[in-house]
Length: 530
Image 1 (cartoon, rainbow, N blue to C red):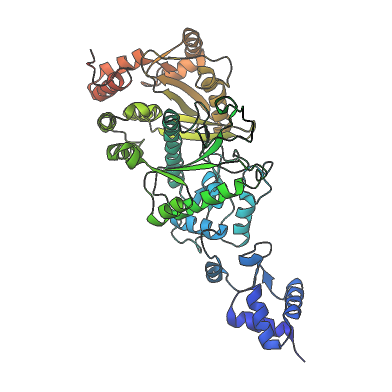
Image 2: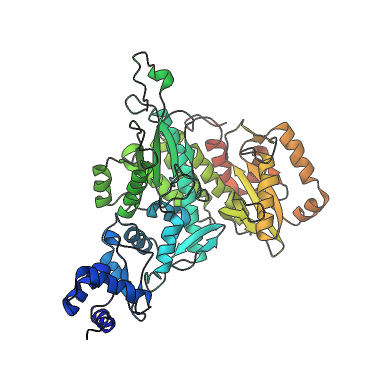
């Protein structure tokens, strides 16, 4: 009498974990049953717990893997994950190449999972993570500065390096991407490739915000002749008045080389976008990928699929790429102001510096960080916080943990001379004094449990009502007593004149003074500065 249970156990012991079609084939050969009977036998034995399956995780042709309790799936999984068009293979390869961890925004992009389920019924990024977790490939999600992080298990990615410093560096790199992408979108607007003020840049903590459910670094709209949308067939149709912009989806990878898993993730997201809007025959999506450099096979795949790849070296020249690389390599704990001045000098020599105002402000953050360092404090740049009580998030330009009781939070605005930072009507007003003092500082306090020493620094000035508000804060009895303990900061706000006084007092601030005068004056650097 044939014992199908023993036959299946023997097959799995000798062959290792098998796809359903493979186990079906070997059972037919060994037990001389029909294909349909073999499927029923396998299903019954699996339900009895004789062996396990990867259900609900499925692989090619919607199959599951069958395996015995003591068997490892690792080698078999590598075999059945065929290429980067397959989600699990793409994510696994990304984990291998990106130090064994991905911030959730990176994971959402590469996995091509839905981040807003209300806008798409396709598989969510969370579902894809759950598949990886059920396969034992990743650990439970950890949060770093309020951002979920997917970390591979060591048995899958032995070179996993997910230390606090590595995560902080990754966040800082993606923050740099965010800043520079703003300027690149401004450039696209000036090129007329996208419409004026039609762009939105997602920050790394905007990972739940997407376009039609999927995460992109930025979204804009194109109104170019032949690329805009319209379903009107009226002969009197006036495109200049009635056209609708085609969405431009932006991938921006400027902190490392762009790889095949990045491009295949982008392709999958763009392909999935057509699902919810397939009824619109005139719907167009224009994908653009900004890269510092790109692997050859990734570039060829992008070109073949019609993705517009914009290499910074080709568009803005080699010197600009070197300038960007130099910014990324600045150590916020040991900022060299002479090196910063040289970086800005080199940017001016490119002839492109006027196009990248937010990057100039990014450099100014480091200049201010170096002042804190000179006074014996250890600044961190671009720290993100999430207040679980209010479910609100923020990013603080410079943060210094003084001790167990106090934390310095510093807002930095690198503006040209003559610009005034507004007070703002409420804490929600962008780039305002109120937003920093009443929203950002509250989130940091709730998140850290420490008393916040707030400092607002600008290379320009403050509006009259902002100064009145700041002076009232500065003269508060408790805060005044705390600030008396510091050489710097000794005030809750510094404008251009206050910075100049600091820079004029010490010879070591010579380069700081030069940077402020030459690069934040609103004048061309070629003009003589009096």
